[in-house]
Length: 413
Image (cartoon, rainbow, N blue to C red):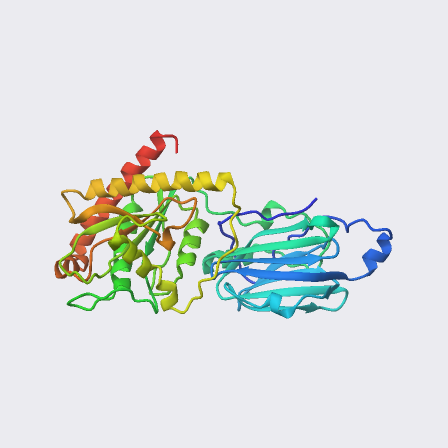
């Protein structure tokens, strides 16, 4: 029986010890089992893919490997222990990338081998599985990883039990830190930009967009958090850079049922003002939407983050249906926000627009991007910096979310 960790897009947590997960299966049958058991495994092929939020390591072996996975801190590491293994893989196939800054592997002595993945951020294993290769070519070990918060990593470490053994053992419930599931409606608020990516600047005060969005996010979080049955998470609560993929991953890790990204951009046309609500679409609704999406999608490049593709999602009809349903919910939320703003908060013409914003790409989390106003317009800028105006807008958004939730529940969502 194969032990598999499956916790898609959710989180685990850690302190310096170990989570043991193993394949829980005997060696593959051979003509001489004793010879097979005495000889080293052969790792003959490998590939490492991903971006700075998720990663996937795939290693092909000549026969089924037993393995154990644990975590270490300072720096953040995923350690994969194996029986004695001969590594016949190309070094370039294990070059660090994305979430990982260093990859090391080799013999440990005493009939053991180890792979160490050193991460740029706290990390968890979301899947560890041994699968048969096609054509009886052996087995492949698939290890999927995702970034988590430091607090989650500390908790994950504290629940681990160190063991140097790689003997098959099924992971029990105590090995697997569960996501927070208090039955509440989780809303992820994403303050746009941060750190090296300051975003736009105010026309008269030169206030950076990253400060405007964080201040508003804190206000909105405080108001939404008072709603019955709601829990709020912030993708960032300080001045730090997060890539677009990381923002999406943090929302999914937290079990978000809504994702609201906050921005306050600038335009060449300084007379344009008012709020806009965007939902994702392959085709932009208009030139302005296309231009803003293109600019926001450059956030990663501004910080020097390579635009690598992450591990591919399973492309099947269920994923496609999920995306379609999510898009419908996103549109419903956008309409609720526009309706709540009308007559209360200044809106741009055609206030619900759509374009290909990468930060709205989660296939299973209804998401909107809210342009609170334009820092290029002096009137909007003045309002964006006014605490009373922030509170008023946050209250209108909270009312829209409440209406959205009522609609979702009424429709059985």
